Image (cartoon, rainbow over all chains, first blue to last red; front, side, top):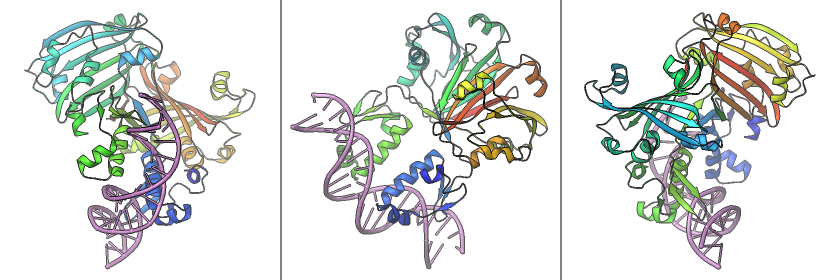
Length: 217
Length: 217
DNA sequence: AAGTGGTCTAGACCACACC
DNA sequence: GTGTGGTCTAGACCACTTC
């Protein structure tokens, strides 16, 4: 790592193989392998069998985003969290939702709209659809007492997720709920989650204006 | 992993120690360690010496975001990339920039504003300040020929980065550059990068309306 | 004090990708 | 074919943290 950061080994350079490095550093080959694997996972090296190891040309440093439970995210900032369920209905999904989940639009799903507060200020407006045929047990959950996401994470196997981040102008409804004005720029997360190949839930999270998602590399 | 996903081991459960697992699976302890370390890095397990290993209570599944070079991001979508430098000046930074970098505001920095295109449509407006005392060599670089970010990534050690994502309403200037209307919601990335403790560059990336950043977990 | 995970070793065999 | 990384083993000692 030092040699890469100090540009002794330049991007694109081949570096010695594991056996030679082990000899140079006076350690076992397994130790070299462990170190190199870690550097490759960080994106600093590119490794291929037979072809050898080279310093990554585009050190695409991977930022890891933690996808937190809203309650914890709010509480970590020192605010009091609460949320309020605006709507809870078992109903037919719009085609856009059904098709994105690969489900038929003539089977009822659970539709939950809720508003999360931080210290009594609107923080996040959540619009969620849940696949009832996969998570029937959620019918009996008091979603006012526990956030749907928190319940799902703790009670359903979730193996795969698809997340996208974007910006959107607040609709009139969103503006009213988030106590801002129509057209204000809103940070939006759209997330779809599967258990294996079975879609579990799709949710749109619209954050209060000024929200920033933060990470380090 | 199977036992966690199939909820045989529930969130919060302690799981057997490495020696017992090695015996159960008929493998060496090092192999168990390797597997458990991988699961811990994915966020499925929490490990502490002496305290043991437990299934993560909040499977904060970590999404890894790749921070790509804009040229590659555009080209990967099958579009032709080009960019055009709007301004290039060695000048004193505004206090906001200097203070966020922890630099004095009476030392000149390089200010570069540029517009990236995808298939001749405006894609990204970039406003960047570079610490010339750390990266003097960039004075002689033809930034019209290579994107500043791409040059920096390949020619400067960058050890630490701070990234935030947010939504903003397009200013009049941004709207004109991105060929949209004032107030349109814009996806914004603010990134500050250091080499060790020395700040290297700070940049604001304003994406074309409708831009989505995407990842999977 | 003691038990846990963290790390390392020396050796072995394997799988893949390039020749 | 052959050289590379990928993986595994059996054993050892270490470091941390909880008891």
